[in-house]
Figure 1 (spheres, one colour):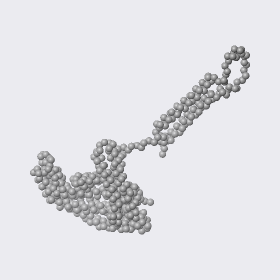
Figure 2 (cartoon, helix red, strand yellow):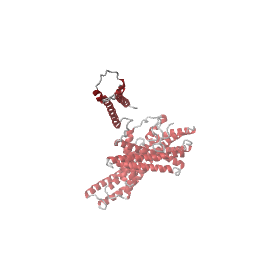
Figure 3 (cartoon, rainbow, N blue to C red):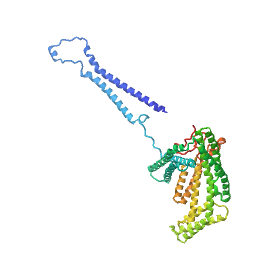
Figure 4 (spheres, helix red, strand yellow):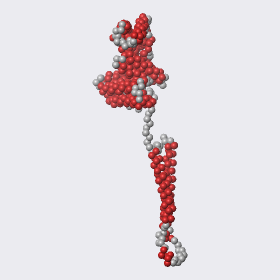
Length: 520
């Protein structure tokens, strides 16, 4: 909408131009009149008495042409004044046109976004790209189960390419958070690089979305896909009941901190399955009535819920297995840790510490191992935390670690990274860029063998993600009836909250295609 101020300017400018033109024309007419008037009056002189002139007068008299120099002076002055006024007005109009910045006269350059705005765009791009990758992975699992690995190879390749771009974007962002590069222009360029990498990740997924839909053919016949989803649903229903028993056993057998990472997971899995039940029923009804679009929409929502229920139940199962493995490894890790301490005390290690620093760290390591031994006989404890402390105490000696201590550190790192990954996957509707970036860095550290760093980063990522979830809230928290489980589906990013019923389900694809199963 054009403001009244902008609309008023052309009218005033037009009025002033008209006035100047009128003045110039009037001046020109006056000048022309002065020039023409003497010519018009030459032949109209009336008879006047003429005194007879003498011979001398007649001979000396000059012939008269009807005008004189004096007659031409005033018209020329008037014409010059009119021309000067017209020229002055033209010059003013030209200068004003060159400097004018009103819309429609000179197009202004687009404003350059501030550093804060570019950073906000980079954060949003990271979250969106990560959501697209995670959602695409969920659907591709169901497609592969039905059509086989060879049929989904092109889509798996696109997904891997998108992961690579996203990983590079997270790496650039992490360096940016650490203050690298330091130059302001280079930092802005780094953010542009993050946004570009995320856009490329989304583009790779968008390019394959239509082909995947053609392969699945859900709108023509969703029967086979429904059977796959319903089969997974039935298997998860039995696993969820077993996971409930497993979670209770964790609380009895270990310290409260040991089972804390999966607290509430069984309840959330049941919530996802309740949501999946309603959506599978609606998908079956739509398929039977020939409404292929509705069947595809409801089936994709059900598949997302089933996939996340599997993540939640699997998280309980994996934690239980890792705690058992850690508990079996703790005694051997204590022995290995004591051997490393004895070697460092004898000076056989390759440590670069001074004698005072080494003695202080040896004393601390002795204390850590003594505390762990006391916990073994003192009742329920956290085996993973015990391994973490043993590995950390030996690492501080800077003399290397034995094989069993290293194995313990690797188990701890894998457990931390896996737990953080599960949490972000089932709460991605609320988790921000910072937690995801820490998690991505933890994965890189784990792959490079930096177990302690991976463990620390994964725990940071989990803490940041939990903070995001607590701060997020949920407008669907009080939903009930036919929308049972809707709050969890929104929190998990299964639905995109773009429509009254919770929005379209997340599908394989990038930003342009992942919400394609929308309401007609």
